[in-house]
Every structure is written in C-alpha cells, then in structure tokens.
Length: 104
Image (tube, rainbow, N blue to C red; front, side, top):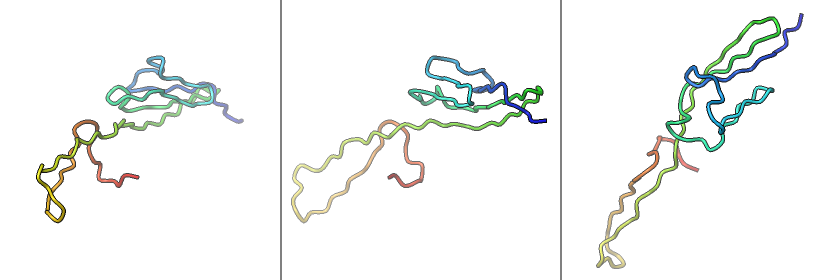
C-alpha cells in the first residue's frame, strides 16, 4: 500500500512555523522566509512529514544567516606622492567578517 504524505510541518528550535508573517509553509512542503534576518531566523529547523498511515519522518538542518560586510573608508597620508610606498588596511566595521571562502 502506498503511503501518501498528508501533513508537512516545519519547526524552528521546536516551535511550529509560521511564527510570523514573513514565514509561509505551503501544502507542497515548501518553506519560504521573506526578508531573512540574522539572529532572528538563525537556528535549527526541522521538517516533519506525516503519512496517511500516521507515520512521521523528521529531518533537521541548521541555518546561519550572514550579513554582507561594510568596509570602512580607506585613508592615506596627505603628502603621498607618486613612487612613495604606503599601506592600506581593509577593515570590516559592520556585518559579518571573512569566512575564509573567496568572495565572488
């Protein structure tokens, strides 16, 4: 006998989704989160599917929301001339820092 999926539920840290208007769970098992926010949408998500026989199956996954870095303005000496040596420091002053993976 074929088991038919009748209920699909998503959870964030054990709480039934949707928790707010940005989250939508569709009957086909799709979860959409609009305007994803760091620290708000981070966490352990679970998807639970229940068949017409009442048999549940659950899988979990972790989502970490990262924000793009904002780089501070560069500054140079006032009396810098062609041929002179200088140093520039790239500083991330907000957002998430480097992850060790190449960008782009």
